[in-house]
Length: 178
Length: 203
Image 1 (cartoon, rainbow over the protein chains, first blue to last red):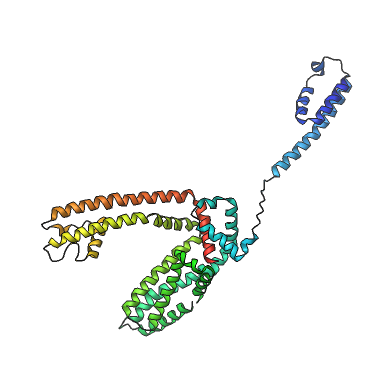
Image 2 (cartoon, chains in turn green, orange):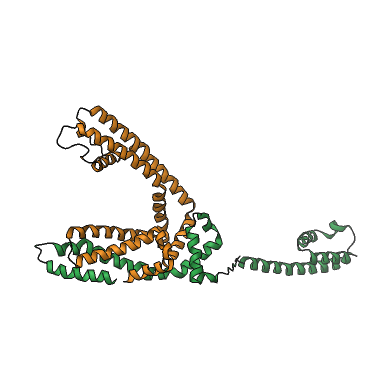
């Protein structure tokens, strides 16, 4: 009888994990205190072992779930179909319209941010390489010419006037070619 | 040649809308000025003209460097801030110029009674305007006021200081504060806008 009762308990354990934990703590109490029915000590011992075995398995499962949960990372994958952005006319018109808009809140939309970030990552190197560094070189050349060489080449009575005149012509040609 | 190629390419691509962007005009003007300076120098033209052209060409080159600050994430916000503040103070500037023009005009008329050698405000309206502007910026030179109209002059000076230096310039600081807050609030959005602008202008 007692065995049957525990068998029922066993099936309950198998179906409901939360209940299992309660039952395990319940089983740990003296058997008589639970049911008042006479239960064979041997069968009770068997049931206890079975339940413990089940609990052990469950604990393993639980550990495994915990391990999986710990190793889980939430990754959101967004797929935006915007291959048209590489189409020179459409893409440029899109970015141009966006940047001309007076509504700055447009740039708070993640989709827009992703598009701009994507474009920027792609073109940043090109902007640095083909625009910024050549401009710096050009600026240095022009400032040097305008501030120093041009003035010194026109200064009368200077010993190095002819040198500066040569340098001046060279720099003017350099600026024109750049 | 190299810079011209980029400008011509942009001009070709944007056609007339190229001229709608302020910085495109700066780029084009800077390029043309540089060519003018080089040609004037090579053809040995008037030295004084060359100096003036060179000075303007140089300031535009520095402006271009300032605008290149947009391509760095750290400086893009500051560049935006300066541009936005300049945009927001345009109506304020009109009011300030009206005030200075008015005071300058009044000084010029009152200086006609001045008996000394050099009039305190200058002989022309331009000089009187500059005089009123200097006062508005805190230059309190009142040495020339010792004439028959000195009480009127001091009253005018007092009004000018109150109106332009205290009221208007503090209003300018308030306008700048508002703009600063507005740009700060949408810091990320402005950064993305600048990156987009950089892309649309150059690519």
